Amino acid sequence: MTTIQKKAVLGQSNPIAHLTEADIEQLGVELDAIRQDVLDSRGAADSAYIRRVIDTQRKLELGSRAVLLFSAFPPAWVLGTLGLSVSKILDNMEIGHNILHGQWDWMRDPKIHSSTWEWDMASPAEQWKHSHNELHHTYTNVIGKDNDLGYGIMRVDEDQPWTPASLAQPVFCFINAVFFEYGIAAYDLELGSVIAKKQTKDPDFRRRAKQVLGKIRKQATKDYVVHPALSIPTGSFLPTLAANFTANIVRNLWSNSVILCGHFPEGVETFEKRSIEGETKGEWYVRQMLGSANISGSKALHIMTGNLSHQIEHHLFPDLPSNRYAEIAPKVQALFEKYDLTYCARPMPQQVASAWHKVIRLSLPNGWMKTTNAKNAPQQLAILYKMATGDRRTRRLLGRKLESEARAAA
Image (cartoon, rainbow, N blue to C red; front, side, top):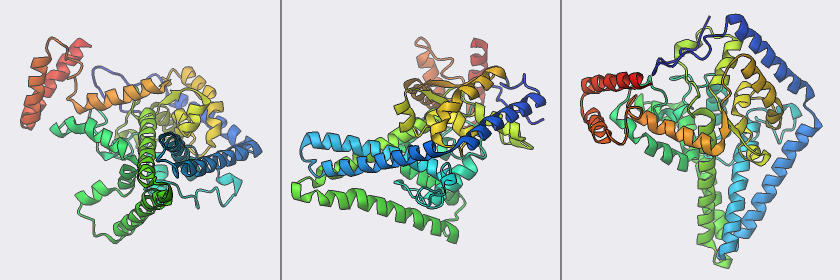
């Protein structure tokens, strides 16, 4: 049986050690039944929902841009910027992300279909579908296979070697959050890997890079040229430019926060490559359950997150209509309880804080935060300095000492 290779950090144990092969496969059967119930009951109410959301988003964007024509007037700037920010979030989260997952393909509406939809993001839809739908959702939280996990710029697990460069991880994470859409585009291009392998002249890469640059140019022209230019008669060119820039940043920060909450808080598991060798359907389900986290909150919050507040349900059933996740969440949670698994769900502020705590914790050597307090902070900082400036042997020896002290304190 393939099992999750839980990292032996600070005495933590395998979270599914109590499950037998039969348990895991039966869990898969029960989850399949939940999925099939939704597939069998999709209908007019679901299609009306997505059409209503699309209509609302388009009217909100149009109305907000109309208000921004007069954005030299501060109240108009605030109102227009807020509306445009919400519009962009809806476009990316509840509409674009879910349509591109094929959640609404069953409607057979060519205007709301994963094969034809394009969204307000730097990354072309086709490239995103490959990196997200095919890679991330297949290899959820598998280190070395799922580059969505940290987007290749972060240390995301204790078993990954700590290096002095890890100290800059919180800064990298924040910059990535601010310019999230461009980070996603670079990730979809596998830019880091291409540069490392010196494959920038590869024809396929150049073709895909041309598509990304074309998409960025189109988005930038719309937000930073056309719409500001329309505001020139009212003396609102610069305020409209600033409003569009602000709305894009708000959308990026929000989207990044939702993604961090769903994949990176404390309590979410990561997996080794070997743990998925020979993986069965039931074991794939278990990996989705333990490699995701939910955000609890209101219906409005769920819509604004694209229902990725139900990240666990989304990872289990990425092709089900997003508006049905809230309906099946109690059934999924009941299965967690039945099989004695942890259903990781917290309010958004707590999940964001937990995710950033993990970002910061993993930017430091294993055990450093656990063994540091107000009294020994100077000595601990001295150890950190030695590890950051020393050679690999120094880092290894001091790292082992920190981990040993952390285990003893646990």
